[in-house]
Structures are given as structure tokens and as C-alpha cells.
Length: 316
Figure (spheres, helix red, strand yellow):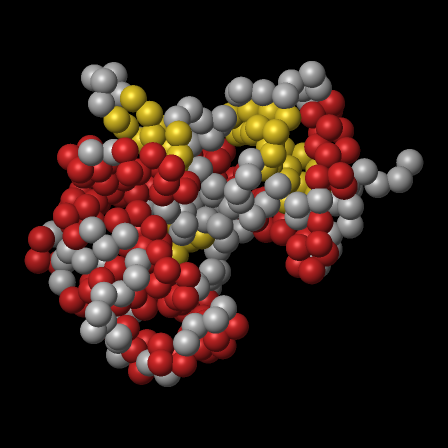
């Protein structure tokens, strides 16, 4: 019997079949049959870097190509580790497996709507309550011992050193303009990033797109889900906030202040030095793309330095 899922041993092969449902669907159906799920509606989610499917109303199936085995191990381990331990629900791990070199996670489906989609409808006071809840959740996440997580555990100093060495070329490859590129070495050289006392478990891509919102017991709004743990890592806690400023608070100072205070930062710590460290981690992030960040939170007139962006993105 031939392979059901297509070969995808390199990033180039993955890109060629990432959205090719004619080649992916037979494997998806085979996995669903394996778990007694045929007969349920199967629908591909429109977003996501990996193939993810709703299976009926209660389950989600996520596929990982052979060249992304580390992402599978990380997500499976983190979901198992976090079960019921955060103030915001995370997907319940139902099963894991493999087919034709691909790995998969079958998980429970969280309730609610995408925070990114409903954000314009959320009143300002409710936004601040949500920010506070997220800050409290990240504080809990960062206290959980990540000992059972197999992948996503780089030598932190070596990881940052490699990111520094590649930073300018990575940003150039992603279309960043020369005026920004020439500032990067000097900026990174001026920011001290102390090694973490201990490695914290990090989501690393906390953004509105990875949060769900729904009604709470009092008729208000609450965060009903945090998902997409495939890029989770163990590292310095402040690395987490690289995405928060650009993709959650988006330059809204009261929102970020509320989140950081709920996380545990003292008032006096919300200073220029903190903003610059967040900016440095944003540049050194594994998936950093400053050109995209500038689209998400456009600089205002006269904001043309990385220090300006630090104050803009992480306004407090």
C-alpha cells in the first residue's frame, strides 16, 4: 500500500503542499478513521502555518510534516503539561500519532471567537480586564516547571548569540528597509539581556489571533482560550513580551500597563530600559519580522529610530 500523506521532508516540499487539500485530505480522513471520527464534518481552518482541521464541533486535528517533528513534540508535551493549570483554558490533548512520517495531535476544541476578529467590538473597559487576565495567565505559565517538555529547549545564550549574528540578514530577507537595517547592530549592542535565573516555559507567540473570547458567568467578556503552542520554548520570561506589545496591546499604553502590572512588574520597572529589552527580544525572536511589525503598529511622524519603536510598540 502506498503512502497516503505526501512527502514533506524539506521546508520547500512543505510549502508546495501546505494548501493542497487534494493531497492532504486522504491522510486527514485516514487519521479520523483511525480514531472513529469518520462521519463528522471535517473543515480546514483558514489560518495557520500548519494544516489544522475542525473535526465536528468538539475536536481539532493538527498535522506536522516530517521536517517539523520538533514542533509536534513541543505542542504535544506542552498541552499535556498545561492541562487545567492556567487561568485561561488551553486545548485538551486527546491523542497523538503518526502517519507516513507526519505526526499529528488530536485536541479538544476551545469555545469562543477569535479575539482578533471581535476586538473592534470590545469596549475599552473590557479590553483592560482582558489584558489583566492575560497578564495573570502569563505569570502562571512562567512559573510552571517545563521539565517534561522535550523540544524547544535551546541553550539560551547560544540561541541569542546566533540570532544576533543572523538578525540583519534575516530582516533584510523579509523586506526591511535599509534605514532600519543599519540601526540594528548598534541597538542590539547597547541593550544588556541578562541570562535568566531559570528557564521559563514560554508560549512565544501571544497575539490576539491565538486568543479566544466568550461570555463570562456575569454576562461580561472573558478570555476563553489560549492555543497554538507549537512554537513554545524554554527561555527568558521577557522574550514572551516581544509579541505582546506588537500583537496584543498594539501601542495602547493603558492596556499594556494593565497587563504588565497584572503579570507582576512593579510600577517603577515600567521604564525605558524595559521597553528597549522588549524591542531587542523582538528583533532576536525566532520568527522576527520587523517589516510586518511596522505594518501592525505603524510608526507616527518623526518616529524613525529603533528607540522610537521601542517606546511606540511597548508604550506604558
